[in-house]
Length: 303
Image 1 (tube, rainbow, N blue to C red):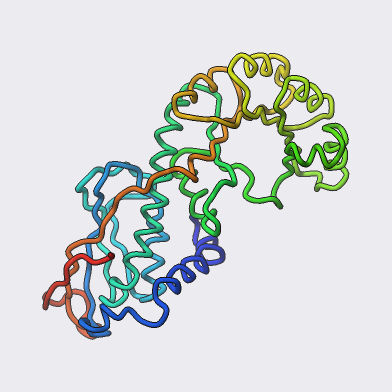
Image 2: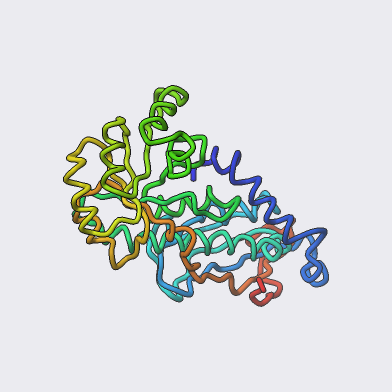
């Protein structure tokens, strides 16, 4: 995630998550650690997977302590292994402890999505088909979850309702048919916007092609019907397959020669990647810097 996106769009959401977790102060930490104590804590993987969200993870702590820094030994999109140390987070101890759970929540969620996406995207190796996400994201977390799909090797579909035209069954019903819906969209949408139409039958596919749809989503069709749909389209529109997309079906769908397979499970069903912050060491006070001798230690927190 580039720094402009992080500052303008992600940072307010990180602040909101921190406010949810700290309504006034961190009572546990305030009781045992001085405000000027500085320290370090180690980021450790507890599972194999793909790491994603290191910039979001670090920014969470920096919003609590502008001098906080992550010294990572892995990069965004790297594959990591259980028990591997991924880096060291340094800063004020009160910030390290107060920000731990929120930072890990973002990192674990993004890494889990990247891990699932990587495993499914690899099933498409050697084909022309791209794996894409959908708008089936956690409310207010779309910017993070879409980034995780991209890092995992997937493609991003439209970001929201304002970024592309997609005419689904209810739009078509409201307009009175596919031809009417496409014509109305052409009149209203910016000329740079492609028009996508969702179809469920071969008859609707033929209507969408005749109406000049740029992209056609073949929704919930079985393999024989999809095979016929690809032949009917014959390259006249970009073809997207959606509905009941599972790892078991993925390669069969790609072998049909479709352009895109969209999969809501990438974001709505990905498990987290289990990560932990451990072995927090108090290194000294703010005046002594981070190179001073250790004066004590605090066990792993984050519960």
